[in-house]
Length: 615
Image 1: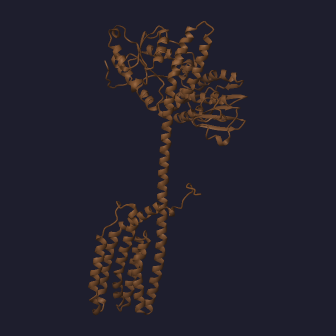
Image 2: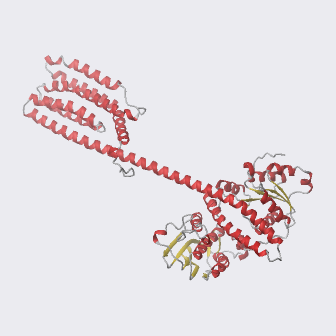
Image 3: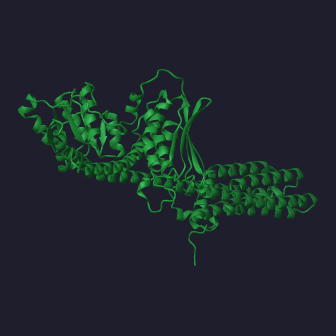
């Protein structure tokens, strides 16, 4: 049985061998012109040096040999050459062609060598031998990439020199022949070794390129998978939020209608279930917003105890319900961070600690370490095995929860902590022992105390959802609602009518401009625009809302209510500066946002653009 996954010997890969040979051929052809020109110049120099010393009877052979040499070198220079456009499969043919060419050039050297050897002058013989050996060694180095070319050039020239020296006889000539033989053997041996080194280096280079390309492919595949995951979360979250938003609004209307009746508790149970599902959807929304870079950091100095007290009030009921002790120790320390995002980090850590603690409790405390404040969340829970420590910050990963117990959430809490840690530059350290508990520490920059901010103000900024939303003394008299889903339009109308708000609800941009074109729109102007982000037929709620604001005037507030979590859409809304509420929205949160925006009624523009209305 063949194992295709087993590593292969690179030397047996025909494609890799062909690529290596191609590089070798490119290398020798790159120096071809210089090499042939040098050979011709060397040959002419030999002629000029040896011609006067050759016997008159042999001089007649010099000119024909020189003519032959000139013709061969000219052919070598003018012959077709390898170019990068040559197909890879033709590379061996060009390597053979080059070998034949240099062998032919080398063969033309042999007659000149014999002519020099007949000169009866030991100095001439010695100088010629040294020059030929030196020239051959240099030429061999230039042709190391192709082993056959080294042999093709070296053997004719050096064999001719050795034979010529031995034929002359005598101690000097035999000694020179011996030196030439040793030189030939050693140079060929070195050439073979250098050829192997060059080949290995090229194989390593191509393997590294292959691995680099594979790495790029893996990175690209990972990026695509991450984008697909983000798109899936955005689509799934949006599709789930739409009906949940309608349920939440109808539940609020039902709760209001059942006021003073026993059945009201059923509506309250319904709303609590909607809130629980909304928390799960919000976790997915946070992942999308962090991946999209739509969360901005507003770092400032504040007293850490404000967050700790808020966390104590939020999680004490949950701890009591499970029979656990939650101890949040105040410290009097000041830190510099984004209060809302730091609160979310610590909230996720405490929530996670309570979920995985069966008995004992959770301690939250802070200590100063130089210029850093270490905020520690320590529990007596099930702990984490060493081989799982690297996985706890992964999305949807949950320890010992194969059945996906809904009480433990989606497994996104620590994933959000990790993203917030990078965003805020607050390192998170983890150490844990199975069945003994876990300690997570968040390292925050220490700050000097400046001005004591009212606790209620910070709590409002930190988490308005954890406190009962208070409705402003007055709400807008008239709202233009753009929402394409009939059920949500009906629920919004029922809810807002219950608070004495006149609502005109439409499904599209065209209908909205038709409403604005009526005489009633001038006599009873709209106080606010309430718009869904993703409308039917691909209409963009942000663009529609901004276009309507241009018609109504910049003082009219615009509020987006959306189930959208696509990163690029969230980024656009953030750049435009338009406030958003994410479905499912509780009635209290919706009314509070409407009241606050109406009270502020600022003339600040949310963005400039060109729009075309349908009126």
